[in-house]
Image (cartoon, rainbow, N blue to C red; front, side, top):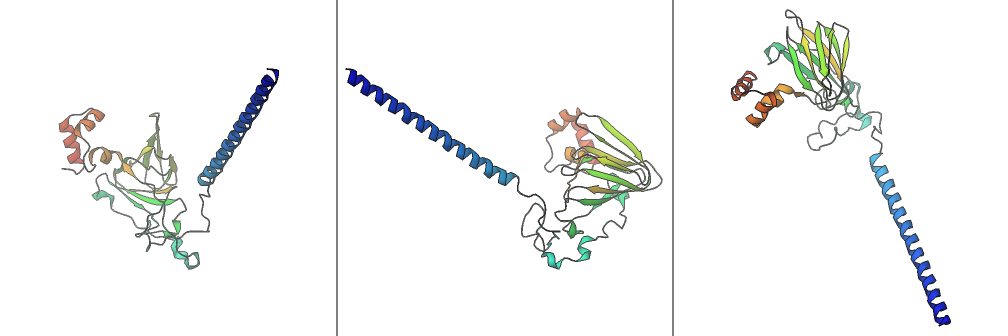
Length: 247
């Protein structure tokens, strides 16, 4: 009996040792897998987001055939000085014929400034008719700094706490609109036009006008949604849609 007991004890010790070894190996395996996943996702998430060249002049001929976050580049050796220059903002536009009395000309790597491709920037010229306004809108992909070139302009934006920041600007004065914030520009002079030059930190800033987003989408937003959002009647919805050029 003593021998048998001693034998069972030895087997128990051996089983416990084997179990400990197995658990240890499992922990090591899990640690290796975890480290491998950390290195993998670190490599994916922290890959170099910046240009690996001095510049990436847009290849506008290839732009229609491919879809990139930006545009493909031409051979850097074929870049010219005029790729980095534009006269797109030199000519005024006629804002008086537009719905709100404003017109915006925005540079684009595909159309007017190929050298700005992948540089994370765009420029815009905003022409405001006398009393005209760039209505409430936002740029979902860019912050904006607006410099008044001529005239007197009231600018402002509302933050996510619904606090309003406004400022009256004269020629030579500037104002920053944070990214994604709803903002406006209004020419306070009813007898003379105003001109604003803006810089945006995206080559494709996007622009979403609040009145058109609410009343001129295609297809239209359901009337019940618009009525409850603005606490107006169905007749109000139709009236506003017609005033914005809809049917």
